[in-house]
Length: 396
Image (cartoon, rainbow, N blue to C red; front, side, top):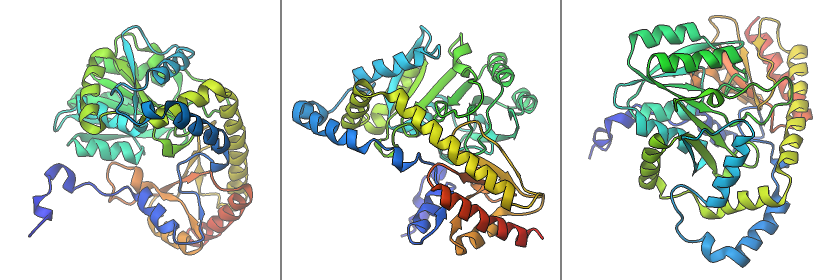
């Protein structure tokens, strides 16, 4: 029996997330990992949650263990909506729905909007989870390179003029994987282009609250007067990724379809976790928790940047993020980061090769992503020195 030939054509070209595969490998060795994409486990509110979960089971257990409505737990929707209002989101025509992580929100939006062969403009590099979601719906991906202030909007318009584009996908604040923040001018321009060429914007903002330097830049969604922007957020980076609680805010006419496809997908996001997030935000100081995370990541980022400056060869360029949990390194032209990654793992250090974040996964890439949120300051210093020594050897 030839099972491979029986698989649906839309998924046969998909490859497992290289980052997930890296995690499998790292679990087997004593490696200093800069490959992760999670908040620092030391920030997980485990003690508070232990009491909250006990209280939920003791007093709301029957409600927590039954089916819920697809749109989400009403008290959590209300809390998310109120927090979004602080940033001038949502608009009167918008609706908020709770999702099983931001990844599901992105996937549902694409499933609701994109037909086979329609185009999606993505930042290059971009988040591998979203790229794979778009690929699974037979979307045609158009990568546009990133500058220090975000995506090249002139090239975005060049593509819009020539191609059938349904969505522009952007992570404008502390972008994954570069850490770059898109300027206000470019945010306004993207929205202007979406209006002009009749397409939508998915604004993915899982890191927006994790600013440790600089001034806040308004979300594209704040300027969305006509329902062009689908805004996606998550509690994965501010609380914990394993709870799988995110949200989407968009025009109610689009949300009507998103709710229907979510019903098909998972019926509803786990009520227990929705209740846990609700109770934590209600009973504890969530903003103080986020501020603590910002202070920690600012410190860790500074340690990593100082170590890079000290140990990396001068020919390696790198971003200097104002928030989030990633930075992006660029090697000289013609150097492929993937073989260097393999040698780094032999020396017990790991990063994410840049090719995993590109539209063309097979093309050599001279970039790599570093995460600074999970390793200790001591391991950051040690790991960057090891990586720096390797780079000096490879780039000599």
